[in-house]
Image 1 (cartoon, helix red, strand yellow):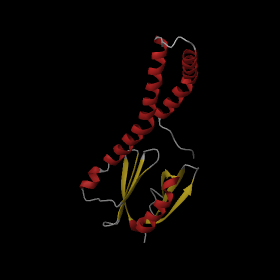
Image 2: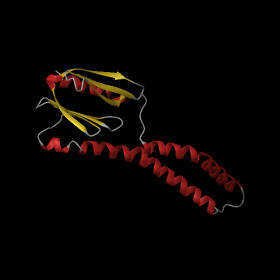
Image 3: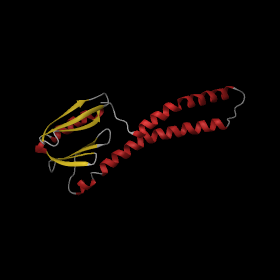
Image 4: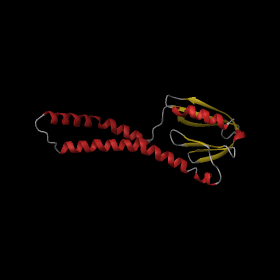
Length: 174
């Protein structure tokens, strides 16, 4: 499975490829203006520079701010459970920000949330775990349960965090 992009990131990528001819024309125009004796920038150059800066700002918002916002929003959904005594020592939010998995070692419970549904799972209902690479960027954290309603819990995580999660799950199930 490839890394899933949200709609804002797809929109940015579309706009980026759409703006390539415009930005390359702007750069060529600026080079031409710098090589001629006329060093003045006209209105078209200012608009181009403004659009280029706006594109950089838009890229920052799409690739940095929106993922942080989505992660905080998912963690905020866990607050009612944390108020009831659930205190996870290990928690992960999926790469596409649609699933959450937290482990409370004191109460021996796991909280799994996905797309508006949530459920507590006792550790004795968890059979085993495994990390399966799906692509270079994504590894699936899978919990195999003894519950017929949810036999496999799958949370896609960044492959760079798979070693950390192997250690965390080893600690949880020891």
